[in-house]
Image (cartoon, rainbow over the protein chains, first blue to last red):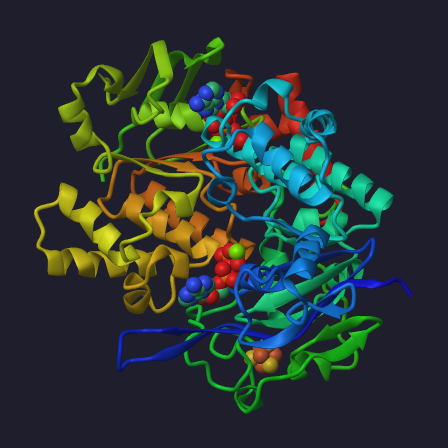
Length: 339
Length: 266
Ligand SMILES: Nc1ncnc2c1ncn2[C@@H]1O[C@H](COP(=O)(O)OP(=O)(O)OP(=O)(O)O)[C@@H](O)[C@H]1O
Ligand SMILES: Nc1ncnc2c1ncn2[C@@H]1O[C@H](COP(=O)(O)OP(=O)(O)OP(=O)(O)O)[C@@H](O)[C@H]1O
Ligand code: SF4
Ligand SMILES: [Mg+2]
Ligand SMILES: [Mg+2]
């Protein structure tokens, strides 16, 4: 079996919020287990605010988890001495959700790309210059972008600088938080091809956080679906898209708009208000929004149970139904969907 | 809401840089009709955001508009004195910026920022402005809006910051809103809610200009499409025509690329 390059177990992150005397706990991440293997792409999808970026920040120790353990190449991250931590930071690279605030505004693109080469690979000036030029071309930017500052680039150009910077140091695993959201579809395709190529060469593992389900479908081997701090469904990408089990996954997949005139998917609707992650009771997080809910759903928080090879979902109502028919997020106008 | 349409005519401009002028916009013209969502799609770096910023006259100072007009109900915004332009910005024409978190002030609670925008353009007291802020946050599906209003931007997820910015653009009930990739950080269920909200507002007369890379959103919610490439408008047509009879090869290329990626999903 392939080596696990990044894993988390029992990961939790709580924030204390509210004024003095009115303390409440916001549960951003609630007991998440995940692993990414060498050469594997794992997609993390889910509701906005469900804790995806917080998981990412815990994995690179940008925030200290409230509980749980993160391992890089099998070794717990926290136990390492500082010298080993710089090694961790080379092994694990992150592409941030908003490139605007993660790229130092006072550095040119050239300096932004040269810095990790100097720090982690200790390349000399000459080699650095060559490598920097290679990197910008690799992500489809021009060498005349090298002397620009981040604010002199368009959103999509900045995103590609972030990707080039992460790939520069030949990491073992890269966490990409919405890396292609500002790219037009053709550049997006090129970047996805590039990521796949680099992955094949270096056996990098990717944790790919995105709202773009088409991208998930195209690049991910496995997908994890988060809702309100927890993973509600996970499995091989093909299986999850062909037969989404958890009601949230079904709602999510059915809401993806189709890029064709006059074609719409049949929606599986959730009702009611999106709850806030503050002082959550111990019950299924979808209670109150789920059209399939039964009273038992409010008794305890359902665990993930297997529904197929490598495929699991946290909904006893759906998973106890033995002969659930396949439910793809099919388009309404038959024959209109290209495949 | 009255319906005001927005017409951009011959907008041409360049960046002043140390290496000389970098042309960015070349004769950009299109119309966003009242009561509709008009999409701007196209290449990354093709000048979509700059077009939007130029409409509101908030492009960076190095950007020089050489010529062109931005007509809001026959009034050219580019020639208005800055004092009158300030009354237009936010109140009649507002914008949702591409990078939500950077557009929010990190040291002020989110609700306060919304209330401030409200008070800038309306004769309301602080209490009422704060109430309006909470309502505006709730309208964009932010749960527990009253509590969230007291939080700072870093306590919001990426998608919540984006929704807060949408709320801020809508709080003064403007006639025209330019949305620069408003839903990129949102999951598709919330995206659908936001697009439904924009749909309701346009049905009430709002003119919406939507910059997006998501052709699915365009197909489902936009009436007309402007396709940009390399600083130019290469095609402007109804959404149906763009999807079924694209005229420019670049439009066809975009559609093909999106089908390549999305095809497997449907
Ligand atoms: N520093 C903080 N203080 C308090 N609450 C926080 C903080 N950072 C994040 N949160 C909260 O934690 C929850 C999860 O946020 P997170 O950014 O991880 O969501 P996300 O899944 O990445 O969402 P999105 O898709 O919108 O980016 C949200 O409710 C958010 O408001
Ligand atoms: N300060 C600047 N100096 C020089 N060129 C700039 C500056 N700011 C932006 N540009 C260039 O202007 C062009 C248009 O940028 P704009 O932000 O409008 O693109 P966009 O179409 O919105 O792209 P995206 O889809 O990536 O957001 C880009 O090629 C960008 O590199
Ligand atoms: S456990 Fe109940 S409320 Fe939760 S998703 Fe399943 S049916 Fe819906
Ligand atoms: Mg996020
Ligand atoms: Mg832009």
